[in-house]
Image 1 (spheres, rainbow, N blue to C red):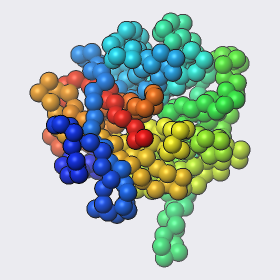
Image 2: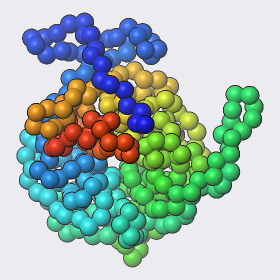
Image 3: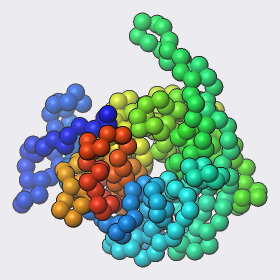
Image 4: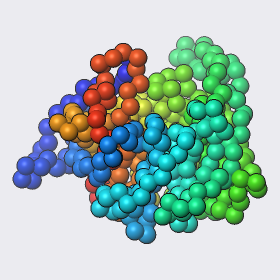
Length: 362
């Protein structure tokens, strides 16, 4: 059954007019005093009728344009201006996951393996013209069998992973122009050096890490997901959605270790260079949380408040991917029902899908 709790009303300490504002919560849930909470969520854009399940998101920092990809047919790349008006869209034949903006181009993870085609990285101009293939993603298979997980009594559980499909998910660049790609099923993180200067014939996809910690047997069934670098690029953060954790990778050696645990459906990541906080979409908790340098949750934004009469989510519903523009964070509401039981998920009642925006704490 889905690991989603019913939305709870949060008692705010003060309000401005009729709008609840951010608070510092007491130690109600074990996170310690001083936890910043702001449940206010605005709808930035409503997807066109019939276009569903937005997943990836990125932004053009020059003009504030927001780009959104969809994971369920019809597969589309959507371009919104900074006011939330749809100004361009492009159809695809395969599911799209992550997006990343660089040098006036949008880079795309195209999951062809889900429909019997090669999975690949693509890029397109900011105005959604001149789509080109960048690289075909390699098939490295599942991580080595008998991955061991330690138990408190000193024993170990052995896990053999089976998923071998190539599922490139999230993207992030370092300052040198190397593109990093997570693979949610193969349990890997790949990289392409100097990607702007190569194409599908010349790009080399190298494996940074292929590790059982990047795979999952949990729920939702996606391992390595969101990616983000810290300020000096000494750590590459990667979310493991099914394991409810954020890991860290040494970008020089590929070594994987734990950074933060018990994040319900850790999905997309974005690092705020100004505050030094790592923001995580907790898709099963319907909120976005901030982690400090110690991996502690220090802030929570958003919540799910039900389904509006027009069929849009009120607030966040299965938030998948974030991007920061100015003092706001924009989030895709994937709102996808994943359990087999009918009638037990609010996502089943969604008729129109949305992009949300929230204020970042000062």
